[in-house]
Length: 465
Image (cartoon, rainbow, N blue to C red; front, side):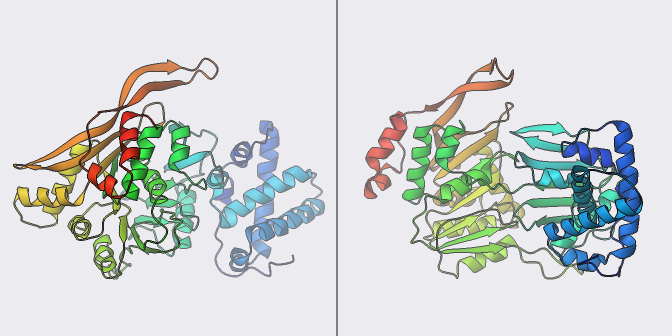
């Protein structure tokens, strides 16, 4: 068979893995067939796979382009069906070839889902439980399963190996970024009691802007103008929200408003930010190796970034002892810096910052910690994924100062819930509400005036944009 050569090395697949449901793979790809047809195709695929494994060099196959490999496998299937007097049509040949390639070098039964642009998250909880998120809603895929735990672990190891990582009983956790930018987390037994768990946050191919967020009802036009002004006048912004609430998406959207002449340094655990400016330095932390050595933390990168003459520093997420370095950077001339934090409310975000600094071993009076926060952060933008699946900017809050030991803040905008509405055509329920301005004049009005944006700021706060 052209392009393959004789088999060498270890077989990556298994007969059991293939029996993980040819019918399931066919269903996932939209092929309608009766149970008897599915059984025949499954039997054919298993026999074809066994014959293929006797002839193929998997090492060479892994080096081939997937499309070239698929064509080679299709040719083999035609030969195999002819030699064995088995009649299958060209469509079935393509389907079987694609699923064989998925099992050989791809992600098995979840390969079609990975390429489905409507899916934002893939959540695997053991071999028989696969969930996806579409339009903010989780749904279980009953027709997508792994054959058993061994098959699932095989796919998990393949994912890890693609990013130069190892996952097994001695190293049962992996947190990494795939080649397309998607984030993946793998945790295996004995830590995961019900089987291997894989969580994939897919990398969006769509470039989200604040204007698109307005069209999607994530934010109002006046609020978007307020955020554009905040970026233009170099306010330090902290984006707060829960998991999957759209923090990174908003950070990406706001970063597009940065002046292209500025030097930006981004620091992340898993690189997700996609800045369009010409002068961007992207830094990514590194976990320890198998021996527990070689770790480069977010804090290490923040410290290093200060020596790189940045105009702005963007930290994907503050979650540990890098917090104080980030706040000090914001306090010492790096205006316009941005970051995200996990918190459900702006006030909780302030508490989390305090707690992270305290847990990092900084024994300073509460007032000193809070004065550092107040001096560093100007604006908190709160995001939330609501029960209708829509991610909304629920609050834009300004930090105004310190009164005694209390951080003073006030809302500039807030989403106010009105009612649940059911769409007559789709039957889908969604939340109706308004993005309401508080009418409070922000403390950064004078700063906006310095940049010549005070009129636009006043209009945005009156909802007149």
